[in-house]
Amino acid sequence: MRLRILFLIAAILTFGFVKGQNTITSAGLIPKPVLMENNLGAFELSNKTTIYYTDNNEELKKVALYFKNLIKPATGFDIAVKPLSKETTRHSITFEIIENPELGTEGYKLKIYPQVITLSANTPEGIFRGIQTIRQLLPAKVEKKTVQKGPWKIPDGEITDFPSYRYRGMMLDVSRHFFGVEDVKHLIDLISIYKINTLHLHLSDDQGWRIEIKSWPKLTEIGGKTQVGGGKGGFFTQEDYKEIVRYAAERYITVIPEIDMPGHINAALASYPELNCDNKAKELYTGTDVGFSTLCVHKDVTYKFVDDVIRELSAITPGEYIHIGGDESHATKKEDYIYFISKVQDIVAKYGKKVLGWDEIALSEIKPGTVAEYWAKDSNAVLAVKKGGKILMAPGSRTYLDMQYNKKTPLGLHWSGYVNVKKAYDWDPATSVKGIHKKDITGVESPLWTETIKTFDDIEYMVFPRLPGHAEIGWTPAKERSWDDYKKRIAKQASRFKALDINYYKSPLIDWKE
Image 1 (tube, rainbow, N blue to C red):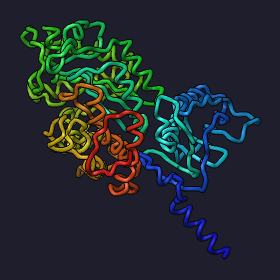
Image 2: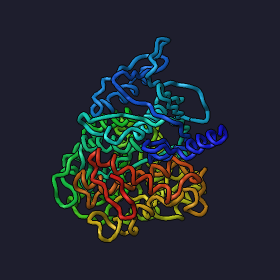
Image 3: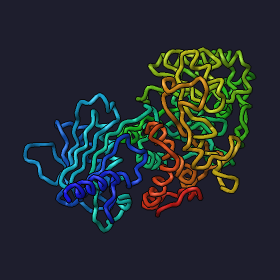
Image 4: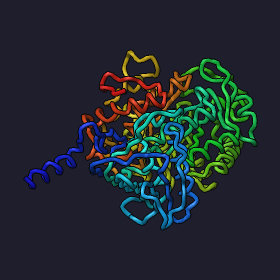
């Protein structure tokens, strides 16, 4: 009899099933943690819960307050946040800094028992990532902005978790259609749930220049006043941009600004005649064609312009990268392109930053620290690695969020094919390009170009549910991932999407569980 009871308990723990009770492994976590173990029971949040943080660490205190404020609107609980001391209450959540080389900068250990939760990490950033896991273990209604009826149970168990790739990003194009500070902040909040750690802002293109450059004010006065289809456009002041950077940093997301050059530059050419070889300003452009514009790469003023732009951007960008674009510069002669990209890399290095650029930059010299973003040509990615560069994986046929899901979906394009939810998820960066290996890859990025994207609802429709899958590719080891498992977990995210009021695409490939 005793043996049978032990066997039954072991079976329950193994399969994580208690009738009517959620478990860690049944919660549908995304990204899927590296290691998970179910226990019986649950921790229940209440007004009597206390959040503790160790070492009087002010940064950790801010993270603890973030968690308190995250759950307060829906639960109604005004949970106390205190430094850890000997006089701790039993019903508590403790955030603690430890030393564990396995976890790295972003990893964490989470232990949940009926009376105590302990979330441990090497850094406050790791604690923040772990909070997103706790968030997903709570009922989805925790995302609502008004008080909801409990209970607020978190299933017991243990998780050990850390990312597979350092860089897990999303790109938002604000040049084709402009999106303001509040929209960008809201996007930051949504992508942080899935442990995204980088936001790449595409700030200039043929259709609009979106960042204030004080030494070249006409870039926004003229180049920022329109967009695709002839709308009013807009731009970020440097104070706007710094606010986005600050807000993102609080969520441990690094902002990478992109100034696309020497092509995709018509907005600048319309603003300053001297940037053109004939010294005549171009007309503002509101269409969607590509490849027709270029800086005059042999004029000294061109490099004065580039230097000023990089200098001002670098001064307000704490992150290590500046993205210099470099794609689809069909109007630039190849030898001029190579010359230009080489000089611009030196300018970026002069201001203490590293270069990111689209995969065409591999045609030029690759300076130390430069990363080529693979989007189209395998040969460019392989060439970049041969020249000593690293690769950021963003293949158009897998990660471009502006691709239509299928021919019937109303938004997006399909020049790189249709990208349904399975196609977006079911691939491995380390094996997708012959000659490129995991050691060559910094991470994965999901670009959203906005030729057809006009509203935030449009953004949500194209981003969700594909971005969570990309986030998992960047976080979870490939051997732990499978489409059959993932489609069950993403189905359970539907209730969270609904609570967050996300206008997500209800793919017929998923049996959604709202």
